[in-house]
Length: 88
Image 1 (tube, rainbow, N blue to C red):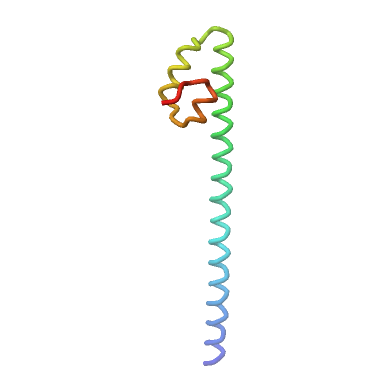
Image 2: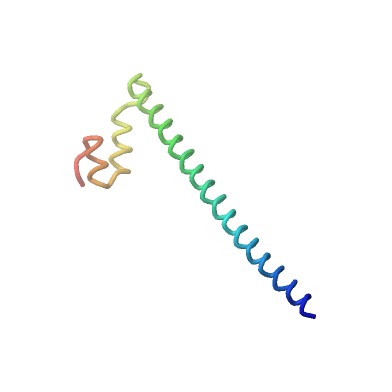
């Protein structure tokens, strides 16, 4: 009977180890996915900003309209200062 109990204990220990490894792997996968999503989001924002700035320079988008968007959207003083907007 002792051999069976020892085998059960060994298998339970191995199961615990494998569950911990699985949890670690899942955590790492979520971290990598989150990092990938943040990078993609940052890239989208940069590309959109570049397109908007290019359209302003080409005269295809009125700078006053973009300034109105920024004035409505930006609240932090340091953000407003980047675009020479008056403080609220």
